[in-house]
Image 1 (cartoon, rainbow, N blue to C red):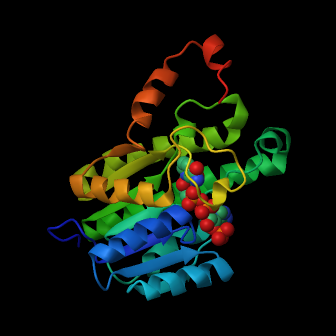
Image 2 (spheres, rainbow, N blue to C red):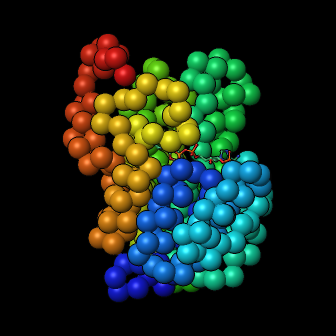
Length: 250
Ligand SMILES: NC(=O)c1ccc[n+]([C@@H]2O[C@H](COP(=O)([O-])OP(=O)(O)OC[C@H]3O[C@@H](n4cnc5c(N)ncnc54)[C@H](OP(=O)(O)O)[C@@H]3O)[C@@H](O)[C@H]2O)c1
């Protein structure tokens, strides 16, 4: 259970090699000594390195095989985790090549399967688990890209719009059942997903997102933008006429 100070005993990272997910785990590790972390990710060097890093940070870590596109396995993976899940971070995702994504069927399908379909099936599995436990928080890493998809990466944006709507609704469904969902909408984050890309205005770091997430979970928030000023920016952008919006260099 999350204790009176708002700190969990057990965190599940779905997409456990994500830079943002690992920053969240590190932050909780500093607040909750002996934190248990289940790192659900595809096996490989990145997962091994994440296990080593979190173990060195004082966590008790277990790695579990998880592939976002193997949707049939999601329910069993979540059910197989023995300890109550206090916080589950849904972090897996692909940015993809934006031009390939709208011109190549396989590239589009992969983005849709990982970012939307996999997020939905994992969310259904987490929802079932929270109903059984009677408590639990889901942190869903959405994106401002889903709020008003842009020409420059609208396939990614559309998948994030879909997952954002799903987790917002899941929060409503779990509200009366002891569950809580925090939808997180970061802007540009300096992570391996954005390596080599020019940073957008108001860019932040995985640590910046982690700090905002920990605070928001403690405060029982349902949605946040990171940085917080992004909320105002997106509110303005959402209402711009399409003819103006399409001329913006974003
Ligand atoms: N970085 C940004 O600017 C930004 C902004 C807004 C929202 N977000 C969202 O935040 C989340 C975390 O992103 P990040 O910045 O931390 O990027 P990241 O470090 O690249 O993390 C994404 C993770 O997704 C995992 N993944 C990809 N395909 C998968 C699959 N089929 N099955 C399981 N895992 C898979 C990758 O794991 P492998 O090690 O297996 O490849 C990777 O570690 C994503 O959902 C992203 O869309 C990011």
